[in-house]
Image (spheres, rainbow, N blue to C red):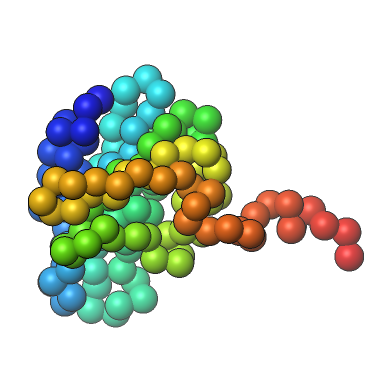
Length: 136
């Protein structure tokens, strides 16, 4: 999938955001090795803690449809920002759990410019399953 196609899909997710309180829309797109796509948008709630970010919405959508870590090659993001929008801390933790460290992350600005990085760049020294297997 080329960058223009990614931009159009992630912009579609962005337009679907339910940002009634913050008015801060975010869209996300998960791409798989076999070309499938899964969209996610932020969905807010009057009880703010019950809101869900676009990144987690897209990843949870993919996982709910049987996709797993080995299937995902890229997560694409866009947000209501003049600069590149990086995932929040909670999303970084989820991304580190549900995607491989070398998977691509593409950050789009609303003007179509983009920046690429990898999952491992988001959260160095991430807490993961290895800590849960440690002997006391």
